[in-house]
Length: 358
Image (cartoon, rainbow, N blue to C red; front, top):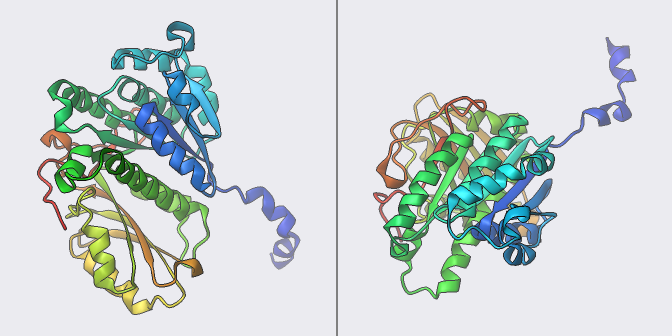
């Protein structure tokens, strides 16, 4: 046995060293805007793919790949806010989309709900990704109330279809941004939301693509996402290692919401500077465990990053949350399983009932 191990040298090992293949897909105008931010960050181990029915908007997006949907029929002129066209144009490009996601381990599909391209095309893209056995995390941005009931209803309908197409959906409601910071300039407000989504996606991606002191592998992430029930993602960056400060930034984000009571599976990843104490880590974990199920499957990852100095960056994915209430006050659950497995777990972060913090 020892001889066999000695013969298995580093050259043999290389054929097994295959980091997870991750695709970040931005669909429609909002998805393209967020993807542009992600592409500029050069996220470790991820490829960016922008998809749109509007050629002018797509041309402004920076990504590894650009895919114009419905080019033969609409000549790159959009959908006029009609999801049925976004859906059809995505189906028309099924083979191209499949070629883009073939071989993926994890796919993020980022889109706004309520318009034509994101609402109609994003669920189609998510289903195609799952057909090639990728784990699919959807990120959904929901419209403000001032955009009108018809658009909010389109968003509700699109979100329900998106949930069924993905393993897990992170929901972000622009209405919460308006309620929390009504005096923000328009551009700054939307930049805040876009940057937060980019931060969250980057943090989740790099939990499995960047080595850690306490490592998290792709199987860990997959296990949490597929745990079923409802899910939630929390993200925060504190300016000091003080546990109270870290917890305030993680739980006090009004755009994400702290509700994950009873969650049965969780992945917590902390990135901090050289001087972050073990006792700080224990205190943060103990505080977060209070609202989780007593027998929670909690996976911890920790990485030292000297460039952070005193700052601490935390991302937490919680799944199998019982009786979670999402957008439009609908309780949603799912298996988190295969393509026909009953739909996504839903990361219900911004329901109308979530209290504002800060």
